[in-house]
Structure formats: structure tokens, C-alpha cells
Image 1 (tube, rainbow, N blue to C red):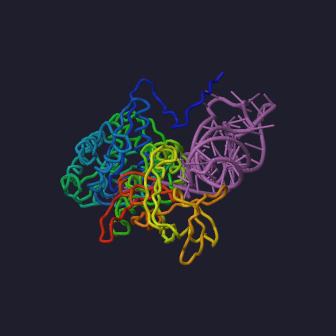
Image 2 (image 1 turned 120 degrees about the vertical axis):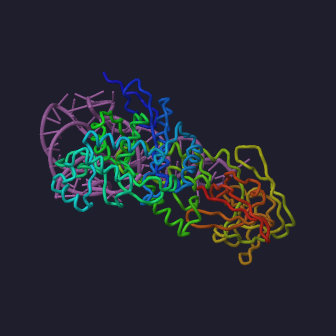
Image 3 (image 1 turned 90 degrees about the horizontal axis):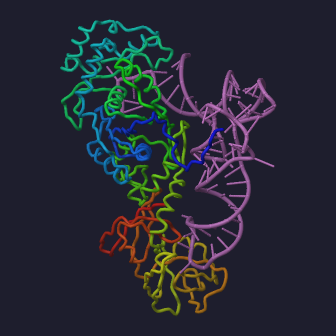
Length: 484
RNA sequence: GCUCCGGUAGUGUAGCGCGGCCAAUCAUUUCGGCCUUUCGAGCCGAGGACUCGGGUUCAAAUCCCGACCGGAGCACCA
């Protein structure tokens, strides 16, 4: 009989070899701030490490100073992001600081005769590859290869002048597997280590060496890197190493953002199309943090998505749902009206509304107003003469005329169906809300300014994080970032 | 051209290695109801899927073959 236990919803089980300590890694290129895609890597890898009382390593795969050039600030950003997500790495490794290691193994491979220095231009090599033929350099003896390798390191060759290839099988049925490049020449200063090196390892080489040296037990990698494993296995065989267990996940696309690469994001930010890496329009962790998303919600969101090989397109709605659960209990309620319209309260002088800060807590806020209040443009558009509505926590009114808007205060509140709307007081403050889709402007109650840094709910509008309060000649102005 | 991988409700996901307990799990979305101290909140309820065609079998989401669809690799990118 087989036992099918009900598992808690969560990540699929990690294939365990038994007895070994689990070591996971997340290995980004710090060429920009962490995106939602990188966040998935942080969450899932660290989660597996936690589940098995293992180790979580953050490794910066920053070995391309040209095409995917690292951004100096981004190293710290990743550290901050990990900390914020409660996924602090047990160890941090920077590839560009461990170049000697890669050189050492390159030499070892040359000595074993399983690697060679190749001088073919890319196009020429492709010809050999397509015809399953070895290029002439493959047959060079060890002495000659060592000599060429030294010259590579000394800068004797120009960029693209020579590469170091790993011998695999030039007749492999899969063209993607034939003698791949392990190290190449790049004569451009690296943001972190300067111009100390001219020979740089490719990702396939660097990450293969590191995964072994760091004792990584499980690798989770994108489907696009599936062939990397097959390439790297040749290297592991040459060196007599055991390859880690691998899991593969498909591409993730966030429906609301489409596909934006880090390089593309960086280009647009540098062009001034966005305010920065934390612009609320961007799918970066920094942006979500500024918008007031809770780390726990982000964690649950990515865990619910799991690890499957299918390419997926998930909606932010799932994240909103998780975040709502996290934020609803702690967000105080306030009134904010977008595109305000003034409403004159006839026969009124001044009012003090006693309003609940949260529907399930006995905690009140006061809103003082004169005989005018503001309602939102959206609500205004639906008003009809003679209609009764309730200004929440204040009073019921009957609309006497629309333009200009005048209403009579009704002493006895209506029974039954009546629409209830939020309002802003005569001495309200200006509020600007930055949203993924643009900016809303309006008026809110003055107490909003006291919630700096907090996530609050603007009733009938949504959750926002109070980002800053700026003093202007016209008075205080609140800038809020829209959560959802 | 060569090679590899995948396809369960609108969207994710469980189940698939060891076929029956699957008239298929959970979440989200959608719809309806309740609440009216808001709501995009909460509570209750409903709807909605095994890509297709063959085969094996008493029995197939699960095993086999084929088709179709989708993604990826064949970079001196990560």
C-alpha cells in the first residue's frame, strides 16, 4: 500500500541524498536592482535552506564587465533586499574577487589535456561545430596550450583573439554541447576589481567551479539554463566531481509588467524614463517595498507559485490577495478624495467627526471641518438632485443642487439603503498618490501626515504607504505610494 | 537545420515515479448572498480544467506511441 500524505501547500519536496546538509545558493548578476524574478530566487532558495536547516549562499556572478556590466551599488541592494525579505544569506561570495580560483582550475584542465586555447574567430568555430569537426587548435599539445594560456593572461592577445575551450564531444548530437567557451578576454575595467584582469570566465565555467567549491547540494535554475547543466557535467567529469542535484523552473512573467530585462530597465532608468529603481511603475523589489508590500506576503506569493518547468504568467492580483491579508489588520483608515469637488453644507457651521481608525478596533480619529467638505470627482459624477447620501461618520445629506454643489443636512439618519461615501474636510491637506499607472491628486484628512512610513487604507480607494510629507508654500503636502 | 523541455479551471497549483480512494486539491479571479463601522475588507455559497488522437489494461490525468501547441539552447550574455 502506498501512503499518500496530505502535504501543506508549499514548495515541492527537495530530493534529498540523505544525511547531507542542504546548501542552496542564489546567484544574481548585480547589474541592477532585484526584480520580481530575482526575488523568486531569493525566496525559494532561502526557504529550502530553512526547511532543511541548511545553508543559504548569496553569490554574485559578476564576471562580465562589458555586456552585463555590474552596478556597484547593486551588491548592497541585494544584501538589503535579502535582509528585508528575512532571507539573510549565511555566506556571501563575489565571483570577481575569486578569479585566481578560476585560473587555477583552468590550468588544471589544460594540464589534463581536456581544455585548449582556441584562436578561431566565432564564425570559423561555428563552421567546425556545425560539421561536427574539431578545430585545428584542439589537437595542440599541453606544452603549447600552457604557453598560449600564459600569453592570454599577460594580455598578449586582444579581445576575441583567443578563448579557452572545454573539450566535450564535437560529434554530440546536440550542437549546444560541443566544446564550449570557459574563459575569454575582456579588456575593460571591472567596476569592482578594476583592470586587474583581462581574462574572464563565462557563467558556465565560473558557476560550475563555484557550485562545487561551495558545496552546493541543490541548484534551482531557469529552464533557459538547462543545457548549462549538460555542458557543466563534462567539466565535472574531467575533474572527477559529483554534480549537484538540480531542479528547473520555467520562465515567470508578471502579467501586469510584461517582460522587462534588468538591462532594459537599467537603460530606461538611466534615460530618465523612470524616477529610479524604486519607481512604483517598476517590477523591482525596491518599488514594492516603497509601495508598502509586506515581505511575508511576497514570500507566500512565491511559495504558492512553487517550482515547475512550465512557463507561467502570474497576475499581481495573487500578490495583492496575500498582501491584503497581511496589511488589512494593521492599516488605519483615512479619508482621501481624488479629483475633489467642493460640497457646501447648508445651515451647517462646523463639525467634528469621530471616526473609527479601524473597523474592528475601538480607536478613534477626529476630523474637523467647516460647512464645506470635499467629495471625490467619481462620486460627484453619480450624484442626482434630491438624492440622499451619507457622509461617513459625519451626517446624512440631501443634494439640493449640483452646480455648484449644495446639500442640506438631514437630522434623522435614513433607514435602509443609502450610499455611503468618504469626504475630506475644509482644511484638508493635499495628497499626491503615485501609482503604477500614473499619479492621483486630491485632498485628505490632515492626520494622514502623522502616518509617515506606514501603510494605511484610504477608504474606498485602496491601500497606500505614506512616503513623505513635504512643506510647500501652499501648506503641507503628502506623497503616498499606492499599494493596491 | 540540429537538440532539449513542457502542456490540469481565466490565472497559479496539488495529484503523475508505485494506474483504481480523481464525478480531480488548494489559492486567486468571476458571479450571487450576508454585513452596512468603508472597501478593492470579512463571512457564506456557486461556477470553472486533465490539449487532441490512438494503444496497453477489468480500470488511464497518471504508462506507451503519434499529432498539435508553447518555451528554450546551438554567444568570447547572465
